[in-house]
Amino acid sequence: MAYSSNNIITAADYNTFVGTVNGVIGTGSGSKGYGQSTLSTVSATDQITAAHWTALLGAVTTAATHQGTSVDIPGASHTGYPATGDTIHAFDATVSIGGTSYNYDLSTAITNVDTNFQNVDAAQQTTTATLHTTTRSSAWADNINSEVDVTFADANAARFFFNTGGEIHLTADQPTTSTTQDTNWDTVFDTAMGTIKMGFTGTTRTGSGGTPATTIGYYDLTGTYQTIFDGTNIGSGAYSANDVLIQAKTITNGVRFYINFDDQHSPTAPSTVDEVVSGTKVDFAVRKSSTYTIANPSFSTFESF
Image (cartoon, rainbow, N blue to C red; front, side, top):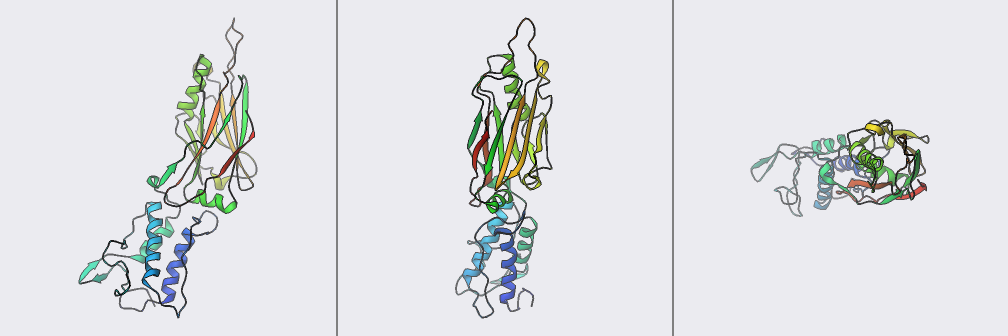
């Protein structure tokens, strides 16, 4: 029997709603599943209480908030919100409560939350402070590279992080700008690269140079390095041949990043000095859901600059 006004609301109706919502907020599989506590189903002999309905409405509302999905269901301060002793209403878009009609539509709300499981409202995300840094401790010329591991507690923890819109952020910096060569690298890092952001299905950058792999994110990685940012000839002027390369691959329960800075500038005679001052670094941070509790990954330098 359909969930609608003037019909009996069965355990099967309630459990169908719960199953759909749990598929979004629970463990799920692949790119679906937020890793949160799930709702309990009921049996045909159970009494479906106000607590069951408020738990369901709350789970749908929280998921919708996280996604930025518009839903028309009652909140705790709204007329019709279930309470012990109240008349049971089917929120089927035609509900009348106390002689007043409301457009509450629970079935459509659940369908929309299920459809939009990969949506993320930017306002419901928070960026952390720096969680890890890999730093060059001496002056350098030619090229330097570093590898950094980002590891989660297990494979599901990684899924939950990215499924809720999590991103790994890489931001490079040249702290000393005492020479034009240092200054140019600092400009590359600050302006051309900006922050490199790898999410679940793509990589972006806040800068204006280089090419991010917008179709390569966590779920596209393999055990072989793939380029997520190509900064070939990303410098300017006399330093235009300088390159940046960032790659990523899967490791057990996480991701390994490869970062290469290639300085192809040659000194102008009579000078023979051609090096970048020590301190070149890459900071790692994350952006993740603030609606749900999502664990940070751990970071470690696999190979130093």
